[in-house]
Length: 325
Image (tube, rainbow, N blue to C red; front, side, top):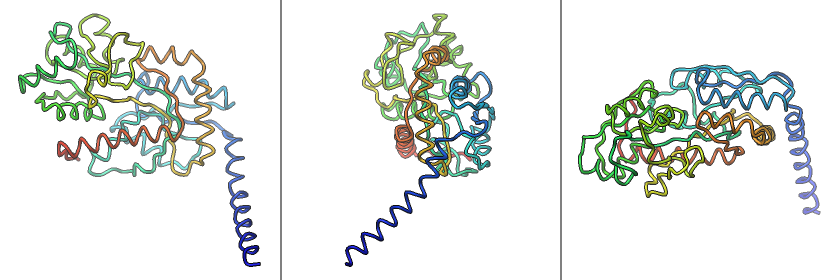
């Protein structure tokens, strides 16, 4: 009799839980019921902005509701993140590179938000990043450049922008015991020109930034930072296949929600992103910005972000990095 009573009680609990989850699933299926907003921490024309608009166009058709882009540039993306977390709206999301908020806890001693409040929903694309040298440089691959830099400490200058790119390059110089001075750029668009004209000796940036000087045959690409080669730069090997895993960096862009976003809604949105990406026009237009389609669900995106966070944490510990503010 006791076993019967326990089983009945357990059944009652399960029924209650099922009833509680049913509204969430039903609401997710009926979502959206009004316009959706993607907050982007960059201005119009930036890679994240272009990606957000391409997906927004297809998703608005699928959802039957407008998807509005709200550009909130500046403040190391904190302005946009704060604006997002300041709302309590299940129709508002962040669309941004994961690397921006991955490094925040390591570069800011105080943050106006808790990174744990940001929840991955859908991975959308990969920005292709590359290591570049001047066309006149005698080095043709990462090994040759590394050996030259090791033999001449302090001789070479690098062009980097603050963020995950910077930490990735630091991981490389630490692993290879290199002394390469860093020229800090507020606007990384200037770095390829400086590289071509000899003011710096190496740059690491997105393909979109490097392309104008590369297509003008003034700089050369010696490695792709992403895990896999890309047809956007045929013939350029990855850093990993050249034996430099410390230079691996995935420029992931995607949709971010908050902790209150129901699981069913996250999965629905991720599935809709996948359907939108099946339209070849998005891939073609992303390619023009130096990016490729790389759609993934909430769990995949979360695993990618954790991998990035762990890599930054290891670099911070290795070089004893301290936040400046």
